[in-house]
Image 1 (tube, rainbow, N blue to C red):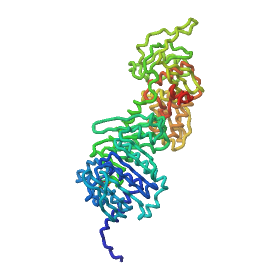
Image 2: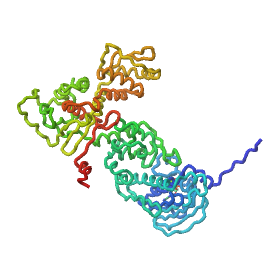
Image 3: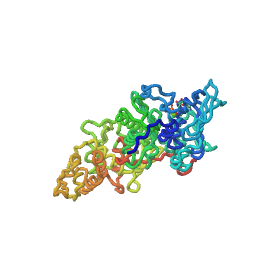
Image 4: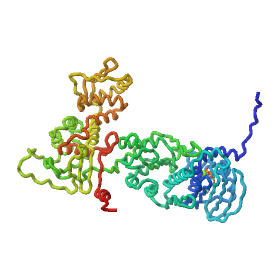
Length: 603
Ligand code: ADP
Ligand code: MG
């Protein structure tokens, strides 16, 4: 039988080396800890120099409050901190550091030199090798602190092996410094790789300017600013325009009380806000700062402090989503097509080009009994006849004030020229039987007719809820299905019924359609069911999106000017008009300035 081994207290340098395993993963973690210490010391100027990806040297100098000479040794002692006094303080953390572990951990896995001077004290220096103090003395220096970490991990070969190429480690260091710089605009930062300046951020720059040094300029220029205050919570920052979404998730930077963190709740709230504005596989770009009372968030989850826990995750999710939605709605790149109501009445819209459009109906309340549901419910089915389009112009909801004008058949008598409102938009025609071309005073817009119609139908379906009209079929339609699809059909049975389907199972392998939604032809209804059962559409929103897609006019459908105008007219007043329900863009615009650039008329 083995003898019990003696329990011994580990020597401090070994304790620190173990702690370093968690705190100091790679050079960029050293950089983070040192820069955060400088910020905690109130520095307004921080200079960072790295060599060989930070492995051979990381040096951080600041002009902060400094450390009194007699406390240098304490600064490299584990659990020694000036930032926390009691357990109570742990619930109210306002500094980056509080665990008193970073310096001792770093000093235990490197050759470490700490020089510091307070405003009224003399400067001092302390040298440590792999956790043991090797020297101490005076140092003539201005107030502030200078930490030099050389030969990182020289005594921990396992860690050394795990480091990436110096160029990769350099990039990680630079990314980290930028992340910190974005949250501390009042501080002047400089990052040098060897002798070369990689980044220089001047104190007082705004967020967009700092962001412009790492993200493409167009992206930053088109970003929307987020600003929401709700009691003690606030969210601010910048979010990219949906048109700039990308396939990678690496441009979502999140901060909680100015601390850079990785947080799934916030990231999913941001993505949720973009739902319907970008494709499912795309990610938006965002830099978001969430502020909340310190007691609402636990930052002491992990030694590296990049994770946090919220008291009330639900509230955090909702406020972030709301802040981003507001920003996207307010800063919509595609403002209403017509800003000022034009004076043109219906009869002046002639089916010849150019034609002037109506102002959007967004703000106008729908007259009673003529809401979007009853008004629009059956027009898409008749959409191919220009009579339907005409009908739309005859009774536009919200246009009670439009002057009554007699409808007249086109006659040989010369019609009065439409009065040209300088702010008005003209419809120029259909291109490639797919895009509707509009010209404004100083911009040109292309609208994807399918996507626009999808958005109109989706809005209508949503307004109608689950009260879809049914079209009974004389001969039931038969659709063969797999057992898995049968199970899914059962799951969404109520939703399908709400949309206007009357369904029945026949022998477990077939689905019988006795009635289909009035919006869909029997052939489209079959496609809809097949799609819904293979795309795993579950929620009513998903199903409306599929239905809108099936019922919408297609690319390649020829539209008369009347039909095109009717479509634009219905579409332009909708919320979320810029994206189809799947998140594809509906319209693209070019200003005269954009065109001048395209044609190189202007630099
Ligand atoms: P923590 O930041 O969690 O307190 P650290 O090990 O990072 O622990 O630092 C220990 C202490 O050393 C800090 O509490 C602070 O008093 C002091 N210190 C470290 N870096 C600086 C600096 N750049 N300027 C002033 N004081 C510093
Ligand atoms: Mg610290």
